[in-house]
Amino acid sequence: MQDILVVEDDPQLGPALRRGLTAEGYRVELVRDGNTGLERALAGDHALIVLDIMLPGLNGYRVCAALRSAGLRTPVLMLTAKDGEYDEAEGLDTGADDYLVKPFSSVVLLARLRALLRRGTTATAGRSVLRAGDLWVDLTLHRAGRGPVEFALTPKEFAILTCLARTPDHPVSKEEILDEVWDPAYTGGTAIVEVYISALRKKVDAPFATHSIETVRGYGYRLTNRDQPR
Image 1 (tube, one colour):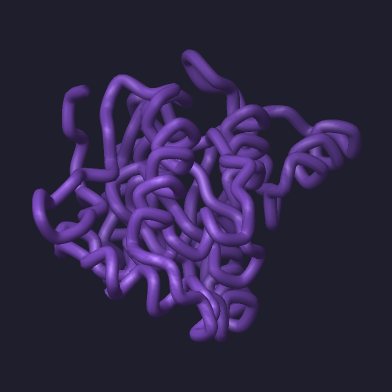
Image 2 (cartoon, rainbow, N blue to C red):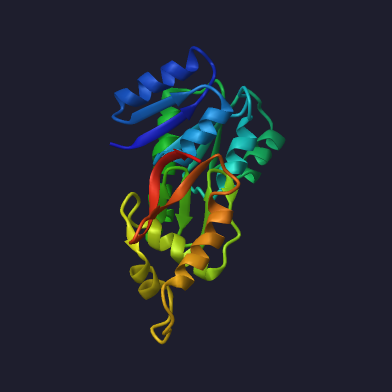
């Protein structure tokens, strides 16, 4: 069963989409504004996103652009009451995969969704994105961030974050990090790991109200899979 996120504020259309897609065997999450849609898209593991353009808060264009900037490549089908080639071009330029003008039939909608799901499966084959809470690490593109905010990481910082993100909520020792990230010829101690963790926290945690990298005293570090207040 595949998960679909529907971001639609219309009080009739939103629930109707949820009922119709659920009847077709999909798991459907429905939200009604752009800000919540962006949060749920980044935090969830949806196979596809159905995104209205005219939304309270962030509009669909801005939501889609933020998702693509964050490295999320989940297929996006945009819905709009507008009809024109410039509107369609704007939606596709922000990273949408397809575009459907209201009103539309359920037959057309389902055909478009099936095509995008097939395309998404092919496009993401061999690609891996690690997630822990709102933090994401794209191993293919060598990018990482929290929500829509992308970090500017050095290669070693990225490698350390990847090491922690592979087992969220489980501690990783300083020695394990040293073995995985540093050259075997390195003969220094684990103090160098502490230096890099400190630098990594300034980028990964300092700008946010919650933290993700925890210290496990006497052992190493753990990347939390949930929001922790600072």
